[in-house]
Length: 260
Length: 201
Image (cartoon, rainbow over all chains, first blue to last red; front, side):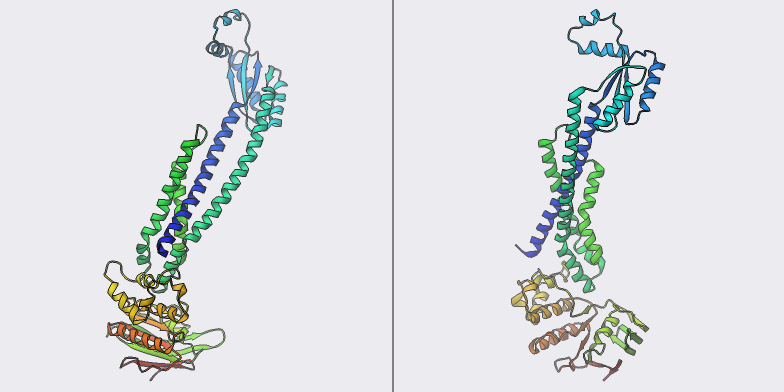
């Protein structure tokens, strides 16, 4: 294979590797963020109150919202609880037997962070409120979920660091792979070839290598997404695709600006 | 004849001394100029000044065209073949095969055409460097000390190739520590840079 063809192939491979690493980093960050958000939304404190009027419930809600670490609160009135039970129970006639029992209103309190200590403190403060009859934190199962979330967060940080490192290393490789183009630019510039002619001469090379490597990396990531994606993984958004295109054209653009 | 470069009262000073002073020179189309000077006389700095790469301390330089300057430090496409080094400078639209083959033959590079530049000897590298400048289609070409790294046979080869280019209408300005060789074309102008002063013989 001729040197120039080999150089182009190496540059294409280095760019594709760089973009795949950068794309994987974007996907992983997006997906783990989404996963943590889902996890956060599945953990809440249930508080029971005998307040029934809308004004009373709103007052309780405001008092709970003032506790630090509380993200948001959802109120379920007695009727809503009853309707929910009606929808969930297989034997609806059970409801007839408990019709005389007063069902308390329920408040679902979602924490802002996945920190078990903080979660416990919020629960204690809620329990201390006079309007709250009792509260439920989910017990041991929720505690285990917090431990899992904490371990998972560490793993996410480690994988993110690895992906950043590999993206940086492959970016350096992509930059080095364009050295041959830099030599050509310098060679022509030294011989007084006008800048415009140099850019025109290598325009195809400057644009095609980043573009085709971007397509290759998107196809690789798409294949990965299709096989392991599920509901949690997120693929590229338009801004991220544009950012990748920008990153793809960076090595050749820097070479061009530096040399010409 | 079209005026390509006009130097009016050029001075160049560095931190230690005056490199050259009161330089007046005109280079016109179809000129073949030999600039002679001893080592350290300021030839290279004068060449760089005339090519517009160095700003003179005093005086005025008028360039009416682009001025490529071949210096000993000029780069090659090290990983590319001899042929590709020359081809990179030729216009792609035209059929340049014949011109390229002629140039390579005249510079004794034809047999080496498929060899990467990085594997050439010092002599061959210098011939290739010179060939890449002779391949340009500019109105004037400046060569700074092109003979230094060449053996006698290749020096004559280069002068002949430069003469051929000159016959096609390109003006030449060649600097050297050596006196003007007999191989130079008739009508060659001979300039001498000595003690910072430029004189025409």
